[in-house]
Length: 122
Image 1 (tube, rainbow, N blue to C red):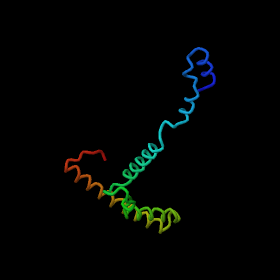
Image 2 (cartoon, one colour):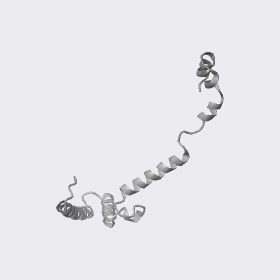
Image 3 (spheres, rainbow, N blue to C red):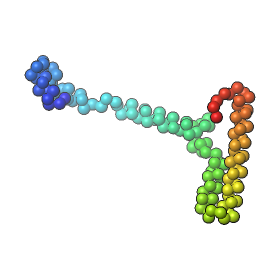
Image 4 (cartoon, rainbow, N blue to C red):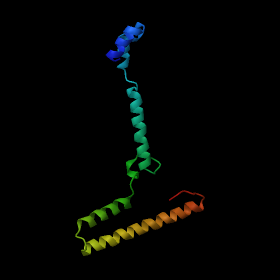
């Protein structure tokens, strides 16, 4: 408690609010460390599940597909080549081809799911 409040209580109130025992109680945390650890674990689990669409969310090998890595590497290689060069144009064609293929696969799955009754916004 603040010093002014203690003086007020001592002057106008009973002595029960001015005892020193309450100052010890104020030093105890409102939330125990076990509770904080629980929420940290839950938040970590939630992040892992959002990042991973596979059946074993804790397994990091399922969070990224092989073609994701290939596409990423192609984009990185293209960014390192001189714009307008033959290598840059070839990498751009490869990247667009891979993106087109991924769009086709996504659209086919979307159609399959819609035919099965899944009405979700894509």
